[in-house]
Amino acid sequence: MPDKNEVERRKHIKKELREKARLEFEQSLPISREKFKKLFDFLDEKLSKTGCDDTLKLSHKFLHENEIENIESVIEWLNENGGYCDCEVLNVEENFDADAIL
Ligand SMILES: [Zn+2]
Image (cartoon, rainbow, N blue to C red; front, side, top):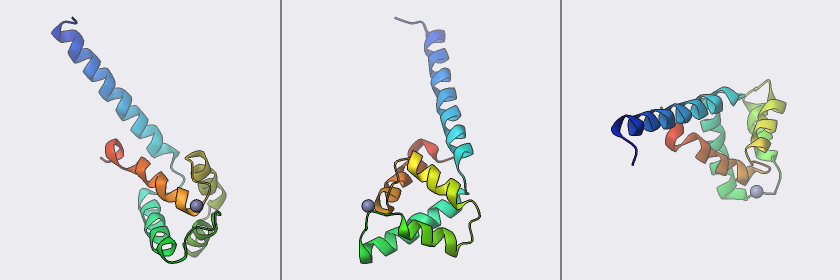
């Protein structure tokens, strides 16, 4: 049975690790959170009408329409986070929730 200080210490470490993970996630973002939010809303709307064609066509369209300059980095980032097609990109949105929210 760890003593009280030890419990506190572990809690503290856990918190720091969470903070660190959040910060790393935040720093890995190639575009702002707001832009991602807009991308997810855009995909949500479009996919409900047309469905996913197993490409990142709609994501590309959004990035072009919003004059995002580092499209390659965004696509690469999406791939790294499991977004290989438009409907999968919507799953990536989960990474922005829960502990990630300030
Ligand atoms: Zn899909």
